[in-house]
Length: 367
Image (cartoon, rainbow, N blue to C red; front, top):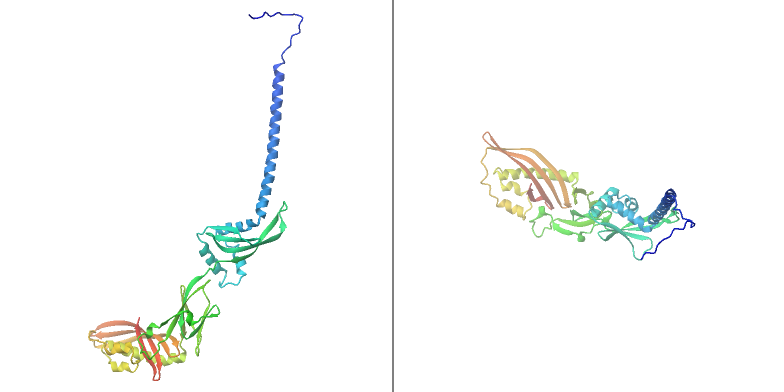
C-alpha cells in the first residue's frame, strides 16, 4: 500500500534551472568542439604535408631514384639520358643518329626496369625484359636536399648490349679489304667462283669472290685495293656491300674494241649473218661458252634482207684479278625484211681472261 505523502509548508522547495542557461552551456561546448576539431585538422594537415615533403625528399635523394628516372624517360621514348654519355665511349657507330636508331630498335616493345647491381656499390642496371642493357654508375652531386638528404647523379653509363646489325660484304679474293680499319681475312669469309667464269677448263683457275658476314653497330667503313691497281669502289644496297675495282683507262681502251667487235659478230652470228670462224679468234678455247657456240643452231631465226647496229654503249669495266675483268655492252640490233623492221635491244656482260695471246673472252652473260 502506497505511503501517503505530506506537504510541509516550512520545507524549502528546489527550483529547476532556467531552460535558456542550459542551452547556452550546450552551445559553448559545440563551439569549443568545432574549434578543437579545426585546429586538430590543421595540425594534422601540416604534419602530413611535412611528412609528404620528407618522404618526397627521401625518395628523390635515393640512389635508386636516378636509375628509376632514367627508366621512366626511356619508357617514354626519350633517349637523351643515354646518348650524351654513350657518345663519350669508343663506339663503331658513325654518329649519334645511328646510335639512337640502334637503341630504339632494341628497346622497342620491351618492358623496362632498373635494379641495383649485386656486389657493386652505387651501381644500377637498366633492364629490358629482364635483360641488363646498361650499367649506371652513381656519385654524389655535391649538394643536399632541403632536409639534408644527399643528392645523387648518374656519373657514367656503360652499354652492355652489343647493338649490332648484320652486313654482307663481297669482294674479289685478291683485293685487300678493311672494315672499320681492320683487315678482313679471306679465310674468315665464304669463297666461291665468280659465276661469270663458271665453265673454265680445269687448268685455268677462275677468279674467286669472298663474302663476309659481319656484325657492326651502324654501316661499317669499307675500303679495298688490289696490288698494282687503284682503290676499290664500294656499292651499297640495303645492308649488302659489293667492292669492285674499276679497270684503268689504258685497259679500258685496250678492251673496248675487242668487246665492240665481238658483240657485233655475236649478234650477226645469231641471225646467220656471221660464221663461227669470225668469232673464234676472240674466244678462250676450252670453255663451256666456246663449246656451246660450236654447237649452236640458228636455223630458226627469221629470214631477213639486212641488219643494223645503233646506240652502242660500253661501261662498267671491273677487275677481279690482274688477269680477269668484265665489261657491259648495250646496243640496239635490228634486222629488216622488206620494209618490216625487227628490233632486238641487246645487253651483255663480257668476261675476259688475260692469256699469252692477249685478252680472250671466257663467257658472255645476257642481261
